[in-house]
Image (cartoon, rainbow, N blue to C red):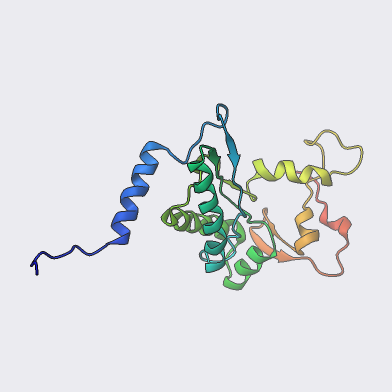
Length: 194
């Protein structure tokens, strides 16, 4: 028998090495305008409604990521974006339960989720990350709630349709978290711009 010692496999070192090389070579950043064989591999965006990812997130991401890698091996230019679906009652309830304003808590959670997802090693194109709490994003998803006949959004009321869906919101002026009572009408949800 040989006295040679087989080196121990150190997953953290090996994964860090290859993830650094992938980032350096930008292999997860396809040319979206010049892709010969484009393939859009969209998976669910996690809800940053807790301190970190859970096993269900990783279960879902693993299969989708494997499929994206398979398509890349077939010659496709795979675009795998990532984002965070941060609007909703889950995020707001978590913030309420620990006593932190969602406007402060959600960015902290997103930072941790991003760190965990990068460590996971998925082929996400981080150049195109989005968050549903970003005004540049929800501006386009909320316009449908403008009252009929309103065409100039600068004079339109500031609508908060999320309140109707979630029954919760953040009062930006007072930096407080509050809930709608049952006595409030939907009319009171519409607030005029200052």
